[in-house]
Image (tube, rainbow, N blue to C red; front, side):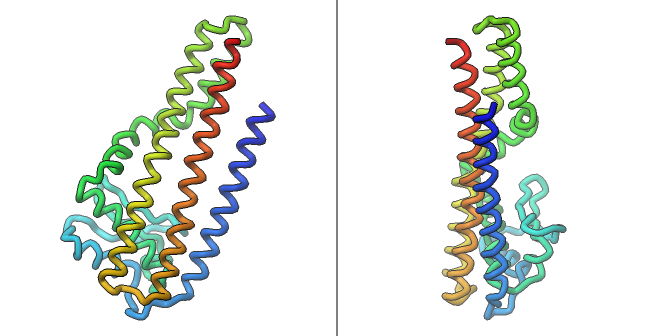
Length: 233
């Protein structure tokens, strides 16, 4: 178990470092005010309009970096700092979230796949580690490598596998949304070169948080797989 704690601790440390870097980037580019004077909400609405999307609402949501697109009720939810602000960070986030709305409207295959996994992952992700651990403990208690404990542990690995798959499917979804956002910002001359550079850098660091999460999920899955299948030797 010590190896697992070290692994989780290392992943948590990297995640914390990337998250802090992301926050510092957004703070930095929040000082780069947009020449066009548009707020994040106005940027979002224009991007939706330019893509012919009329059934998605742009709304404000509490918190910092809580921005997201909700495909169920078709809303682009922008945090208070993004919704009202008129800077490069707000433009980047607003356009990125609208990128997801464009994906949804165009039935982007990776977003469709991720949406199908949401109900499964929402049920299994929270209990998967405990199921695997419980199976391993049962294997140890009974001394039977291929008995009920093993199959319980494998079931837990399958649950964990869905969460890991979800994390990796999220990567192209997030990278593509950022790409759509940056292309639109540039093509429509929504930002100056300085503003564009800030938006691009901020979105790169945002994407890295998802990359760290995916690698962390994979590392955890591989660790528990070794414990389960190694216990049969």
